[in-house]
Image (cartoon, rainbow, N blue to C red; front, side, top):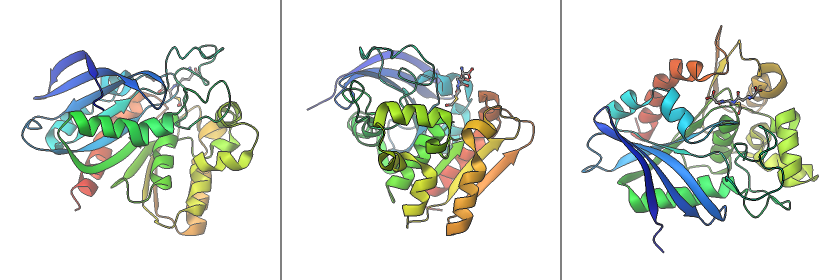
Length: 282
Ligand SMILES: N[C@@H](CCC(=O)N[C@@H](CSC=O)C(=O)NCC(=O)O)C(=O)O
């Protein structure tokens, strides 16, 4: 069945187009919004997709408006798709009460617990349904890569580690690497997945590295002045498990940079170059 897309916004940008759409999602049983950048020339040439997963409190618009990625994406011929970070107005009691649970905080998991499980199925949405919608409506090549920030960095690492071969490359800015061991993650996983901690490990990058045999290189960018570094993000945990298992990791610690989109904007071009190299098979 064809998915209907409703265009909400359109701007010409660096010779390409920055667009925003709403559609009915089967995964979350509700309407979802996403943004997509189409580089110049995409009318005639299929281009690879970079998925960008955003963090807590974000919509599909934060990256579009703050990261400054379009100039480089236009040059490289990279389509960038930014999904929203959760269902909206799902009717779950308390969904708008906290910034780190519910709206804007889907954590890219498929919830198993009532009343969340009917709608909070963001893993299925970003790995299966939205890619299929994008293939149906846009001129995309087969190859895709994935990146994200904070909760979205966790999402990007998890999507890649759970699906060897699916993404040509994966990178993350300030990711939550060990959500089963930090307050943001524990609160979200208890709420969405229940008390069985074994199910939590399915969405924890540090745990997934232990099960992963594909050994796809991980690229992580982390600001040293990030106020969430020690309590929530804990990149040293990922560094330790990767070292133990000989899993390739490049962890760039950046003195003076914080958790904001100013940090992302400072290094996004390097990440886009990295993904473009992998997507072209170079
Ligand atoms: N309001 C909260 C923190 C919210 C915050 O910093 N969100 C980050 C992502 S954090 C991890 O997923 C973000 O990207 N915000 C949007 C932006 O445009 O900067 C608090 O104050 O603690």
